[in-house]
Amino acid sequence: MLGQLGSGINRGVHLRALAAGRSPRYADALSPFAALNLKWNPFGAPLRHERPALAVAEVDIDALAAFVARPGRAVQLMGQPGHGKTTHLFALHARFAGSALWLLREGEPPPAIADAPVVFVDEFQRLPTAARRELLGRRASFVFTTQTSQLAALSRAGVETRAVDLVGFDLVRLRRYVELRLEWARAGAGPLPKLPSGLLHTLAREHMGDVRAIERALYYWLQDELTDVGVHHHRS
Image (cartoon, rainbow, N blue to C red; front, side, top):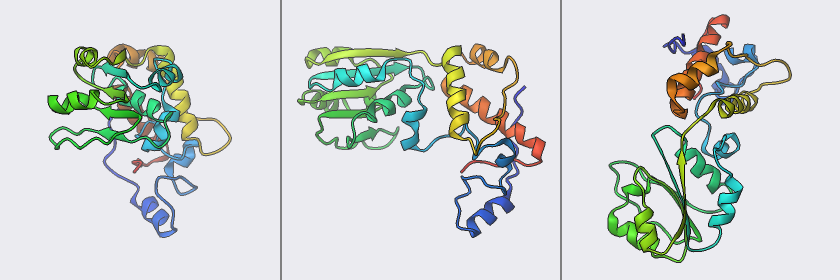
């Protein structure tokens, strides 16, 4: 149903855009996306600073931000891989201008996390036990994603916690997500691509709330739409 991403890239469009001093991310009359009234594939990965405005949250982000603004509190974000933990983390982080956000990568040495009124950590469970204990002992608040519950450690540290278990997209949030993404990539006035009837129902059923898998399927669907103008183009 959802075709595969073509291997060919419109290198002529890409190189002409570079030669003209434009980023190939942005569409103009030279871009195949212009025929769809889009600047890029709306289901590709947004830049980090763009993600909060595109988040379709399962929870009240403003309420969680107000809760964690007081010291000694934490928001724990849990869920299966691909179900929106990091998206919610970024949305909360955007409410605290100037705060650092620590992304802990698998296999990399853990960083020394600096003091801050609110500490944001992605994949908190990757910190060594001693580092987690030291961090939770600070007079601060915390927002983090984790694959394993940290509620016992938070309780021992006397940190008041709101635990959020994310389930991913339902059909209502999925429709809102598609609307936001298409508008984000809009090139100008006029119609935008329309999804085939029943596609969202199928994706919601097949992927059981897995946001990442749904994004990937929609990305490839949009790339297939470009066959109507005879070219595939990968958003850089």
